[in-house]
Length: 325
Image (cartoon, rainbow, N blue to C red; front, top):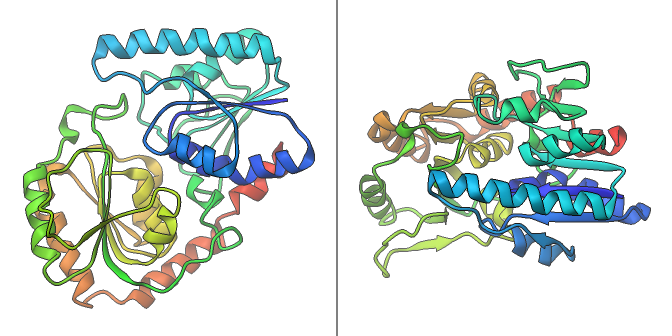
């Protein structure tokens, strides 16, 4: 019996191949999932039943109230289901409760600059993280030659198609606990640039935010179920999502990432020459870089060679998770 606490669509993608293997092996899965973006849609599409733990709140007081409610919900599930193993991506709730109840818990974490959550996450029986993760919590903490994105975008798991879209834009909320006050973007400037680029280039968009775009703009919304197919068919990525920037990078697509936060795995992808990080103060400079890639000044073949170098040094994380479990 295995209990998963899923907070974000990325959590499902990280574990989906492991979950499919578990289901084939006859293990019993219990899934608790936040109502976050398309997470419930992805679980429905894959045929999993789950318990919703709500969508959360945006005010500071609301976050604490919701956190208490999630703790109570998860505690009830742990007592009633009696899992042999718990798993999550950076869930402080599951790490805390499993340690109190003496249930083995595996937590994957790559958000290394999160001081409010790390003291709880490190209570997990086992912590898995990228090799460049700066912390070492205990003897059950394993820093792996991997990125979480390679659990589902490794060539053994995913085959990319031919490029058909020029630019993929991604916008996320900036009020999460791991975002600082300097993470907000000048959305008016970005939308203006999108409108300019859409006159000559095809654009794919994924957004957590409600954006006011003219109806006649040639901008397509990404399909949540096939979002990685959409991403893999683009020539350049721009956005403030660390996960999607990393996804583009491991696919060999030049990734422009704009955020006040810079995690260790982001720096590692920069070192491979696959990702380009900008602070929101340098927003205009980041938008200008898009044209550099579209104008052919940067060879697509070079990025594919960098991707090959990365893959030669990294593991298929899903294969590792199946072996580890």
